[in-house]
Length: 242
Image (cartoon, rainbow, N blue to C red; front, side, top):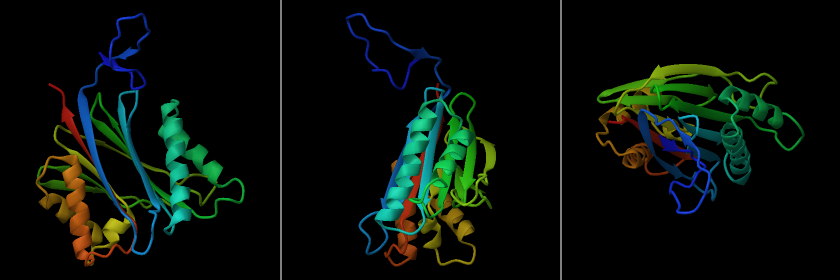
């Protein structure tokens, strides 16, 4: 058994109520890094990583259009709403539809936002990817890398969300790697997504934070150390519990 995410994970001497849930079969650990666009003080990217009581690990990057304080505020609203809705028990599809409706209501929101989401089921090891205008997401398994692409449009464009869902099975030692457009666009290659896959494949660490740092460092090196757009990386590893 495991404690609920919302519970204090210590048993006290006095009377109290505790919520226990069935133990999951997989554990996850995440590492993330951000780099702000040159000449900007705030990143237009926002991200989250959280474990839910349902036995799922959720991670997401929202890339606000443009850069600076306006894009940062816009993407922060999207991420905050996602966290609140998923914690309240809404499905990810319903959460995206509700947020899209909020963005299209009123005059304060004028730009679309690219949203990348992944939900890892820690019981089965399956991962559901939902992408709205987001950059390619990668799965790294040893010396093999797969790119999860999408042709969907960003959030906040049409009344109906242009949602694309892809499900993949993950195994012990796999990594799910999310990047914002600034990472991929930094590569001066004809096929940027394939080039990013090669970079990820060459990284040998099994530490999530170190892998994220290495990806950012190598992407910056390709752009002569100058971030021409906001850059964000989230790496989440999954391991089978013994």
